[in-house]
Image (cartoon, rainbow, N blue to C red):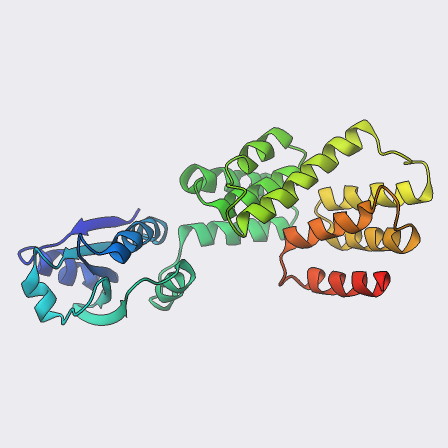
Amino acid sequence: MGAVVEVSSQTFDEAVLERSLDAPVILDFFAQWCGPCQMLKPLLTQLSDEYDFVLATVDIDQNPELARIYRVEGVPDVKVVTQGQVYDGFVGMLPEPQLRELLGKLGLRSDLERGLEAIAAAQAQGDTVTVAAQYATLLARYGDRPSLCLDAAQFYLSQGELDTATALLAQIDPLQRPEGDRAQALQAVLDWHHTLAVGVEGAETPAGQCYVQGIAAAIAGDYDTAIAHLLDLVKRDRAYGKDAARKALLTLFAILGDDHSLTRDGRKRLMQTLY
């Protein structure tokens, strides 16, 4: 677990310099009247817990001598302290991805990232028991992270644990981007579960069988097979289920993300099929 300590001139040496001999300390010079400071501090606090580092905060109005010594001209001014030396970090507000990049350069590893790596390794081995256990552990600590909730919901959908997936999806703000779009796509997968349970209209036809095979593969997480079946259906019978195959493909692309190789290839093949 990380720690957040408010530092003064009297405690600076012990709380920051000496502590940095064991691990890097993130030093945040801030002011109560500074809007960006109030936005940055909760994010740094969240990351300190995840990466297990010490976040030391200094109110420049209460400690002007520290601000002068370390040449703080604007806030927020975040510095990195390691082995008793204070180094410049950045001034102003940084988005979360850049903050994580900075922490990575300091050699800090996120417990959440390690957990997700363990999940990926277990999934590659088909070890769903370990995957479920890892997700339960991560959700207990980081259940407020939308991306984690979405990853977990996707896994539970593939396992047919619909109630758990539904509860996780309900935590996502539909207006939040891009998480809301992905949640909507996973909701469509949840609907596919119900569709298969009650039966697909025209399931006995070649087009119906192709659609069932496609969404069943998608539910199981076999996206390559799912895309192949759905592209075949678009080519064979575009009108089936009021363009159901094309809509299902767009759902899968939203789940996988624009940068995924299956999405890039699938979009190209869909355009070639349509036009």
